[in-house]
Length: 137
Image (cartoon, rainbow, N blue to C red; front, side, top):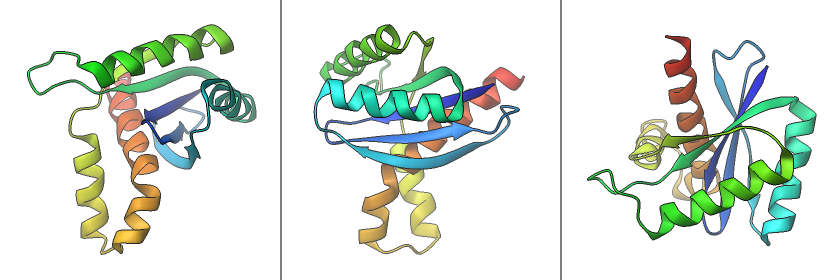
């Protein structure tokens, strides 16, 4: 049983996958967005390769817990993914995951260029790991 984690943005989608036992998350790629059909097809290929049973999508919420315009876009895209792939979709509150990912990369002393290339993949890993930690309890 593998779970896929997605950090969906307007330009990229960070992708992480769990180990087969569902204990740890590993960032695997960043998808450069083209259009919804192509993006979903790329996700489908990854799901097939890793035999994914559930997809966890980071839901950007405002600090007061409300869902803004970006969150509404993510909810709509997530529904399209679930419908197209027939895989259950779970939403995960992603507040501060990108900040945590940036902080971890700064502590690892990665250059700005390197951080920019992998921030979405690292954020997807944080989203998925948070979800895995919750379901293991």
